[in-house]
Image (cartoon, rainbow, N blue to C red; front, side, top):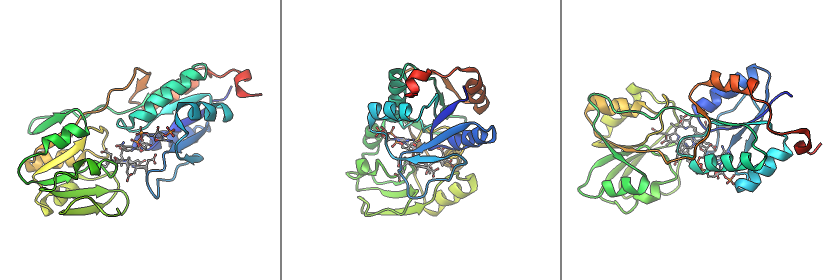
Length: 256
Ligand code: 3Y8
Ligand code: NAP
C-alpha cells in the first residue's frame, strides 16, 4: 500500500523532508501549529492548527487514512511529540519516526552555562543589569518580564504587540541566520549575554558561533526530555523507513 504521510513540521529539516517526499511522488500532508503569520510554503498540502490533543490527532489520522507519521517538530515542541507517540499507539501503532537534529555541544572558546528549562534561565538572569540577546522567540518572553533591569535584544518572527520590558530592541527576522549577520547584530547592540535554546541544527547556530568569536557567554537552555521513540537525524533514513515499513493501518482501520 502506498504510504500516506503526515509530517509534523515547523523546522528546516521538516521542509527538506517535504521536498524529498514530494520529489519521490509520495502522498503526504505538512502540518503547522499556526504560530506565525506567514509560515513557509511547502511542496505538499498544508494543514494548520492544533489537532485537539491526543484524541484529536488520533481521529485526524483515522479520518485521513494516514499510514505513517514523521515528527519533524522542533526539539522544544515537546507536547506535540508526546501527543504523536500516544496517538500513533492509540491507532494500532501507526508507524512513527522522529526526524531531529543533534543538540549543539560546547567547543573550545565557548562560555556556556547550561540550565534545564526556561524558569531556570530566568533565575540565572537575576542580578545586575546586562544587555541580553533573548533569542528564544515570542512564546516565553513573559517569563522574563520580572527582570526589568536588563536591556533585551529580541528576535521575533512577526512584528510584536506590546512587550513586557522597559528597555528593548526588536529584530523581526526568521532564520536561517548567518554568522556575519548575528555578529554584527550583537556588536551593534553591545550584547553581554546570549540566551538560547539548544535547538541544534544549522539555521539557528549563528548566534552561538558569533558569541564564541566575540567572547560573549551563552545561557544554554537544555532540551525537554521526551519519551522513547524511533529517531533519526538523516532524511534519507526517513525515506528508507517509509519504503520498508508496512503501514500500521489495516483496511478496516481506514474506515473503508
Ligand atoms: C511556525 C514556520 C524552515 C523552518 C525554519 C529550525 C530553524 C529558522 C531558528 C533565533 C532563534 C526560535 C523560533 C526559530 C528557528 C528555524 C525554522 C526556526 C528560533 C518557523 C515557523 C514557525 C515557527 C515557530 C516559532 C516559535 C519560536 C521558534 C522563532 C516557518 C519560522 C526562537 C526557536 O512568534 C511565535 O509564536 C514563534 C514561535 C515556536 C519559539 C517561541 O517560543 O517563540 N519557532 N518558526 C511553526 C508552526 O506554526 O507550526 O515559517 O518555517 C520555523 C523555524 N524557526 O523550514 O525554514 O529549523 O529550527 N524559531 C529556537 O530555536 O529558539 C529562532 O532567533 O536565534
Ligand atoms: P508544543 O508546545 O509542543 O505544542 C503545543 C500544541 O500545539 C500541541 O499540543 C498541538 O496542539 C499544537 N502543535 C504543535 N506543533 C504542531 C504542528 N506541527 N501541527 C499541528 N499542531 C501543532 O509546540 P510549540 O513548541 O508551540 O511549537 C509549535 C510549532 O512551532 C511546531 O511546528 C514546532 O516545530 C515549531 N517550532 C517550535 C519551536 C520552539 O522553540 N518551540 C522552534 C521552531 C519551530 P493540539 O494538542 O491541539 O494538537
